[in-house]
Length: 239
Image 1 (cartoon, helix red, strand yellow):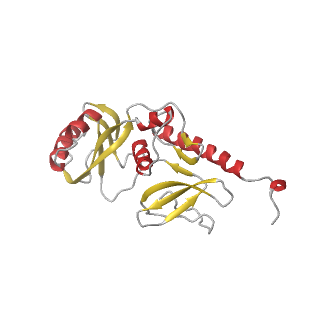
Image 2 (cartoon, helix red, strand yellow):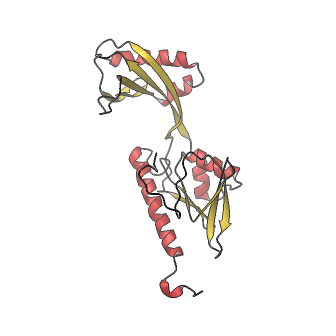
Image 3 (cartoon, rainbow, N blue to C red):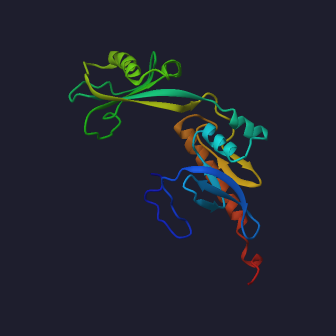
């Protein structure tokens, strides 16, 4: 969805829905470093730079599978980054119930309770989303879905201003919800020979604004890197 609304050109194709299988270092015809991205479908895309913004463990695992191992102190710090899990439940409730609104850190096993209408989201039916804290999520992670949903609903009910019978429910196991401790750097350029950057919520602050600031800082670094690769007009060798 991030590519929606962006104009596509022959020099900058937009590829959606491709699953990456590996990353390889490469060289351009002029000898400059590049990165080659291989997909599970067998396609290969070459780029002057690559930005990885998924949770840090997934980025590091992708690099490991590609034979690129963490060596430096900074690389190892990212490789050692651990995340809290979160069990998130979505409840469809009957129209007309007295919603609790938006409750951030309501206490107990709940880390958040969100009435989607109070968030300004127009949904065909009333939806209530519950996020559970790390302790509850770890304890119930492998339990059957129906059992977990019942346990979550029992904890949601006391926060509802009136009875809210559910008509449907679903459970989402969010493995990488929030870093246990963010790494104190805005992003990571993997190394000088591989133009790969890592950014996201594992850097500086493990919140949405932290992930945004990390991505923005990485983008500025990539732009500087790309500008340095562009030769000045007087440096271009005539054909």
